[in-house]
Amino acid sequence: MAQMEQVKITDLFTLGESLAGEYLKGFTYPWEALSGIHDLIIKLGHELPKDRYEQVAEDVWIAKSAKVFDSAYIGGACIIGEDTQVRQGAFIRGDALVGDHCVVGNSAELKNVIIFNNCEVPHYNYVGDSILGFHAHMGAGSITSNIKADRTNIVVKGENSYETGRRKIGAILGDWVEVGCNAVLNPGTVVGQHSMIYPTSCVRGIIPSETIVKNNGERIAKF
Image 1 (cartoon, rainbow, N blue to C red):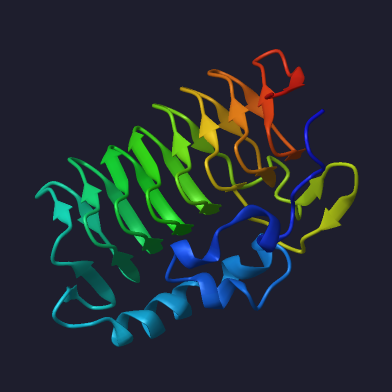
Image 2 (cartoon, rainbow, N blue to C red; image 1 turned 90 degrees about the vertical axis):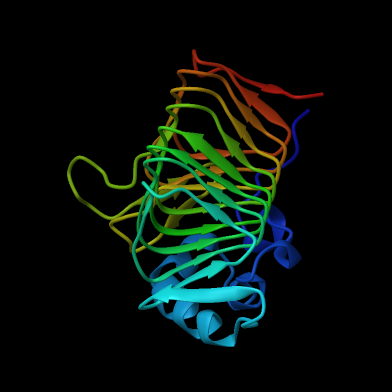
């Protein structure tokens, strides 16, 4: 059997694997942290060690060991972590806290996100109003859909329903989540640790940890 639903911050993330770890400890559910990302980045940015990070523009800090291609756009507020790659044509709109050893790939777009260490969004991804855990990986073309068609507030639904009070929430991916190519994560999707989403799937709600979601919507235990 798959494990029980994971929906709390402490269930989903290894908090030591992000500069946002202490900040996230102040909340119970991950969507509660989304509104403060901008201010968090500015606070953290001014505390970064100057021998390892450079402030390259207003409210934009990039680790000296990071590789940022010339064609990438990075708007503030933003932190790019150590040994991270920001590849050709990446579009970081702002309010993006990107960890160490990450990949932000060609034509990937980020907006209002926390991306933990060793996370990859490597090809044609849109990630907005989302938190991606340690070693999470989004396959080529997979996206987070962060607003409902009717623009009403998002309810995170699983065994229980959670009124978020937010109009924009993308996806919350726990540690080591794998999302297949061209999958769509609908507004308010929460995926527990070590789960896998099949390519071309259309996913919504709370996915328990250690679960495989097939592209016909079937859910099975991973082990």
